Amino acid sequence: MDSLTNHKINSIAHNKTWLFVPATRIDRVENAFASGADAVIVDLEDAVAKQDKAKARDTLKNYYNEQNKAQIYRPIWLRINKAGSEEFFKDIVLCQKMPNLAGVLLAKAEQVADIESVHQLTNLPIIALIESAIGLYQIDDMAKAVGLVAFSYGFLDLCNDLQVQVGTPSADIIANQIRYQLILTSKVHQLSPPIDTIYPDFNHEVGLRDRVQLWSQMGMSGMLCIHPKQVAIVQQALQPTDKALSFARRVVEEYERSGQAVFKIDGEMVDAPVIERSRQLLAK
Image (cartoon, one colour):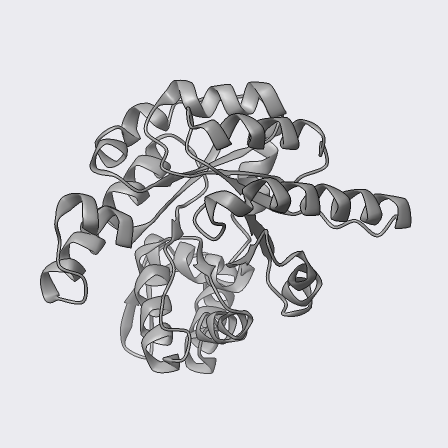
């Protein structure tokens, strides 16, 4: 793993909210940053119709040039089209003209060679989006790709490919299996924990909060967002309760005071895993 990749893996693990902006609406980029999102993704793939992609690339390049001239440029991530497609090669040329991009999200990733090719051609870190059965099957191989920093996934695309009925208990089972596979593979290959897929109903605050609790408790690092108002909800949902913080502080304080490997707090047995979990919570 090269030093650039290792640095990016460490840095993006702190990004909890990844907000999409269509490349056809570059005017929304500043609002996206103003929302408090940890990362802003300009989307050249599904959010842009084929006939609009050339204009969208030109508009993005103009925005990039204007920001650089004003010396107020803030790095954005760019979601590009599937490797091997006609639009993909045009996207790569654009990336080469924008060397200060934060990184690239490769849509519909399926092969190690595709990830490494994007990295070699752009010298940018890559997030691989798993959106097909083949891609999901190949994640262990793709995890070894030079330049890869994290996985995410497009659940609706996966459901279509796997013929899973969205919005059913069966779909929830499949989603959690996908999360587990990505979490395990990312850990084994020392990648940043995976980023959860979008929550499509941006008006359903309770449902979004429940989703955040699910993926955060499973150990994922963040979430793809499709609307600015989702950003604050995700961030609030990730805040630990006062009770949890108080318990963690007491655990760490008692361990540092006594040096004991095993002790009790409020009748609860505390040992090494609990101490480590408490430290992690306080560190966040």
